[in-house]
Length: 256
Image 1 (cartoon, rainbow, N blue to C red):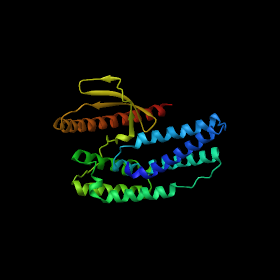
Image 2 (image 1 turned 135 degrees about the horizontal axis):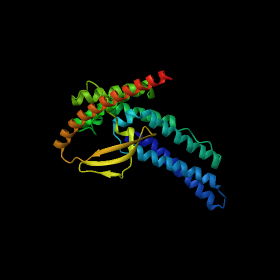
Image 3 (image 1 turned 60 degrees about the vertical axis):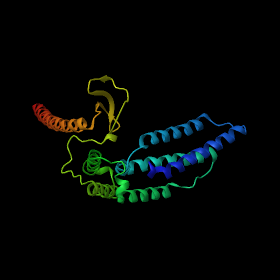
Image 4 (image 1 turned 135 degrees about the vertical axis):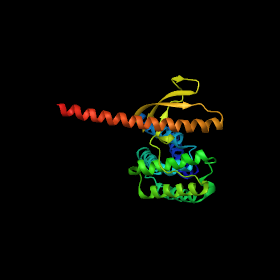
């Protein structure tokens, strides 16, 4: 999460300074309202959740999720500024504009550097998944990106393609980036080849996630190819079922 380090360090410093001021006020005998302390705790928890979600992610993730991640960081900075004003009657200096410029500069530099762009993509499968992820965002989620986002994603995709010689003709209908689904670490069922977990897709749709246990890379590649075939078959089957359902639904409505 090196590209976010500067902004996160500023945010941490501001929260730390605020905590110091609150402790100073408490030691002087000033009474702090429960509501004020709850507000501070809420912002700290939100920041910790942000770090948990975005820490340890690769460059592809940060480029694909730039607008969403930057939006969260900006909101956190605004929350902290509001706390400074409400608790200390201090108008905080806006640091976000500079943080945003630094973040964009770091991303642009990383995208154009093959060694950085491929640092976390050391095998063909990782490179292929990176390209699929970028294609997914460009083709299926383009409405949530601005022109600068899309330019960064296209540039990174070309960097990966050129350096790795991996190419993708078409985005598979079944492909979904891993960050689109969150699931519980504790499975509710297990089998000989994997486990089944409860999860959430796109923040609000309950789903069931099957995780396959694979130890050997040769088996992994063979299993992956088989899974791709099965997923393609499943995707066609679901499309057929949905089409039939819609026709039946429309026919039923006509009966009324």
